[in-house]
Length: 231
Image (cartoon, rainbow, N blue to C red; front, side, top):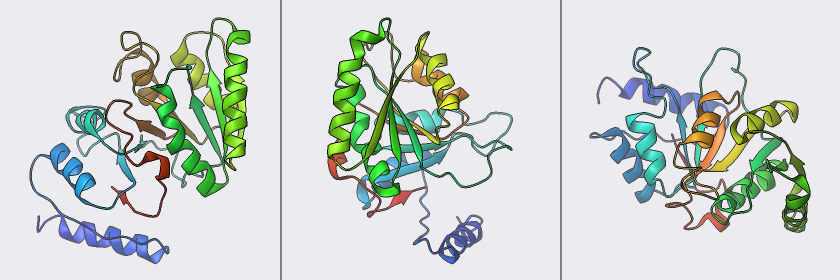
């Protein structure tokens, strides 16, 4: 702990110098358990994590720590994949929100709308259907409800396999963030970090906001940025 304290203090000072309220906490024990414990005990709205840990030989890319946190987190997570061509701060101007019509997928909506309201963003509700005509009424309904809540929104559809289609849409729509849940319509085809979510989280060029549709939800309707972010 003594070795880490100077780095933590330096990070806290740097954030405060930018006008960001910050406080450092050191905990000892299993990293994922301590992150989850701090998130539960503190007054936090979000957890923010980098997807890679300190070891380049065995990166913490959705491994023992990150995966366990996502599996059990009661809060939305902001996941950032560090890479050289994305050094500037993220601006939440354009948020891509994949939806498949299921209640599980819709659990991302409070978190996405919270970001949209806070930053004046536009939410793009995306569906990757076999027949776009079948989902347009649903997407229009979501757009209408979001606009009534005071957040800008638009709809989009893309053909193809969900994972690649979502990634292509993020690039073509110039999304700053992708926001999604870990489970969708079928737990067999859209499992926790399975075919779709895992591909997006591993390949996305932009940060990803993740809500675990099985464990997250308490307080999400009013979640914002007033409480705090555990990093």
